Image (cartoon, rainbow, N blue to C red; front, top):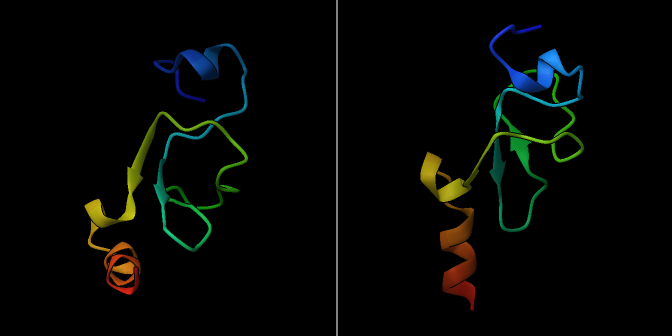
Length: 62
């Protein structure tokens, strides 16, 4: 538990990681053991922001 986290203090289920959204794959989280989109995440990114090329491949196909 993190004393600085409002959700931890309220005992709400959540994740401290960042959710990374892919074009044709399940979203993944930067936190080990996270079930992904099942839990609320404070931060979310498109996969291109972290160097993934799946969005680029999809754009070329369309």
